[in-house]
Length: 242
Image (tube, rainbow, N blue to C red; front, side, top):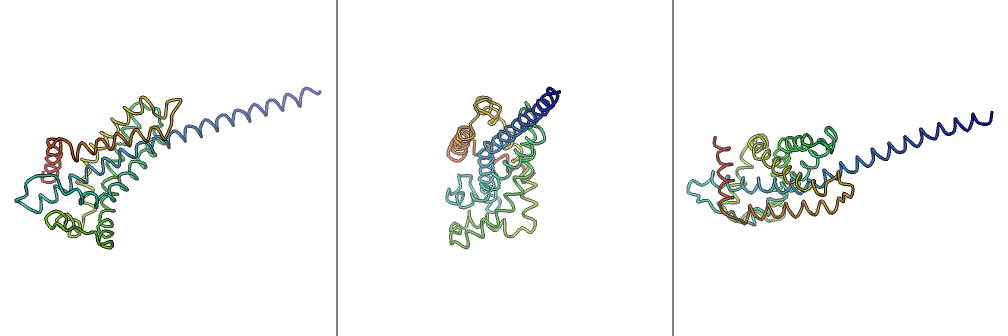
C-alpha cells in the first residue's frame, strides 16, 4: 500500500519536469528568434538610408533639368537621416519578428524570404510617414537646408504632394524589395557562422558584426566607386519615370 503514493508522486513529478523542460525550450527559442530580429536591424537601417540617399538625388534631378549627376551634399543626407534610421530599423525588426513567429528561425529560406517581403512593404510606408516630421523637426531646430537647388527641391517634393505617403510608398517598394533581398543575403552569410541556431549564439557579437557590415556597405555606396552610385541612380530613375 505504501508504494502507490510513491508511484503517483513520481508520475506527477515526471509531468512537472517535462512541462518545465518544454517551457525552457520555448523560452530559449523565443529568445533566439528575438535575437535574430535584433541582429538584422542594422541591415534594415542601412538599406533605408541607401534608398533615401538615391531618392534625394532623383528629387533634385526632377526639379532641375540642367542637373548634372554628382553626389549630394552630405549634410543634407545627415539632416534627413532620422526618418530612414527609425523607419528602416522598426521595419526590419517588425519583419524579423513576424517572419520568425510564422516560419520559425531554423527554416532554410522561408523566414528570410518572408522578412524581405514584409520589409519591402513596410519600410517605404514608415519612412514616408516620418519624412514630413523629419523636415518639421529641422524647421523647429533651425537646421533647414540652405542650398535651394538640393534642399528645397526635396522639401517641396514632400510638402507639395498631397498623396506623398502613398506615392513614396508605392514607388519605393521595388527598391525596398531589392534592399530586403540584399539584407537577407548578408544575414544568411553572417548567420551561417554565428547565427541564432548556433549553440554559442551571442546577440551582442552578432549585432556588432551586422552593424560593421552595414556601415561598410553604406560607405561603399555613399563614398565608394561612382559607378555604383550611377547604377543605383539609373535604376531609381527608371522606376520613377517608367
